[in-house]
Image (cartoon, rainbow, N blue to C red; front, top):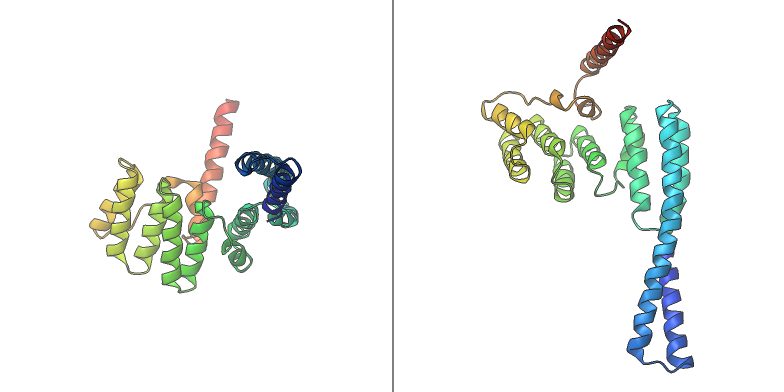
Length: 244
């Protein structure tokens, strides 16, 4: 990571100058050196993150305008900043993987999702689902465990974890996961409802999460199409009402 190396090099240079050129006590030189390290690191972090955020905003506008390939290219171009700042590369891979996944381009999404940022719960959930579809249950579970470890306050994440376990024949483990989720999010309606559904041997109800649930492509293409048509019908109806 260039930022760390430059900051450490600057701090070391200041320490040596203060120690051997000015005869300053080691503790005094070390204190000043640490301040130099922090200042240089902060300055470079601001510069790099500003460039990364600019790239992400530009890519976001392209994605919204349905220019997916252009948006992905911009994010891939920004990967060069990963050499400068920790976690930048992982965050960009998360975004790229999620874009491909949303387009159902799962083969291109997978290698990027494998490098996803540990705090991007949606990207990790998509990776876990990809493992499930590849018949790799152990990796699916390990990925979900990593996701809930760092994102324990995400209601949908707990429900996705339980849903995938239930789909792979692990209904008992699915209930245990929802029970853990209920402890993290006491009073969460979706977790409580789905826990009760599983206890009664019924299917989990996920559509209460709306569009975000369908982004994980765990329902059939026909169900997704019906949902999209219903959403479009609702928008048209609202427009008619507004005109009246």
